Length: 171
Image (tube, rainbow, N blue to C red; front, top):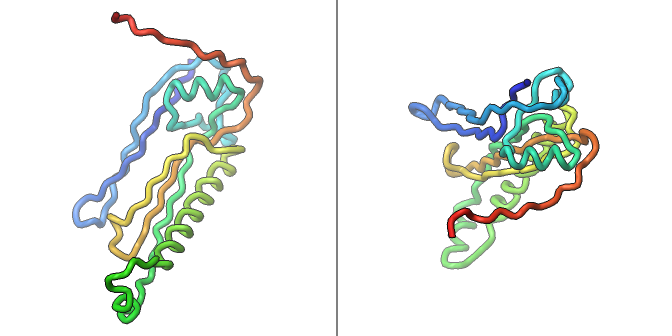
């Protein structure tokens, strides 16, 4: 039986003086009983997914197949406003349009990169999308938008999914 990895969690951290970045991917290997090669990427590689085992079963039972773990990232520099403009806003609430626009642009670039990865691997959609926005690693005038999900494609006939109720064994 083929083995695949589900529930992939991707983490990274800076090493040393911020010059090196360590990536760690952790997941759960499972065996599935589908026909050999049923869930392969167009290049023949096995699929990867960040979905949990339960989410994977729900996906398969609804007629979709996982394709690949996909992600998009954008680190965007936001230009600071001038000193006189900042001084004129002291003591007032005011929108900082350069930050708003920077966040929007970073998000759109990261999402489009994730979508391009999904399309490259033959996916027709992305599920379980997670995102994170921060500026901790790159300084005060940057914003980083990271997004990840599982690319999927229609993979066959859907089953009728009937919810089941679970009762606790203790009183």
